[in-house]
Length: 194
Image (cartoon, rainbow, N blue to C red; front, side, top):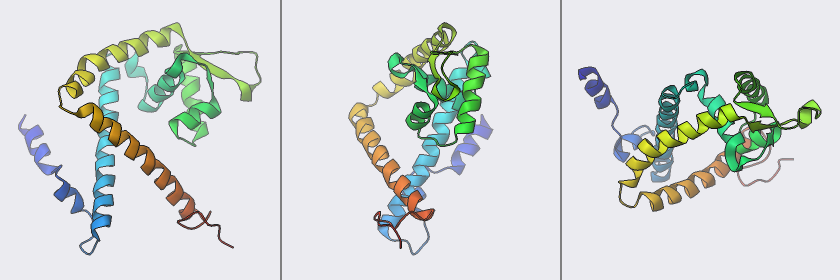
């Protein structure tokens, strides 16, 4: 318990502490963006920890990494079969070999199945199997019982989460554009270099 308390003291979640990671001569805008990135790192870690701990409580869930669980959930979305390209796009990932590895593991464990087994390799789509559906439904029940009960108790949370979600999606576009600039596909405003 004491160890947890001392560890908690090491991280100051206040906005002032987050802006402290920006250089001393940083503009207000740079400080705000730095604080946002700091919060995103923390959110990513907290979400990964939640997903790991939640899956570990479920029968068979501890066999899956967070990335594999994400693939399973994306295939489950809207209860429609999805191919590699669609899974990659929906997860906003471009590491196709890692996604293929995850699909192979999910197939081996029986959580997904090929929706069109006779299709050429590049046209194969996947759907959640009965075994996978049991795991997902158990996850969703635990999520409702714990996470959604906690967030529902915070006044105004639904509207705040909606606003934060919109902002995060907008920032994804900004980071994608910045990434294109860094790899040489244009300038910060999308203009191609000669």
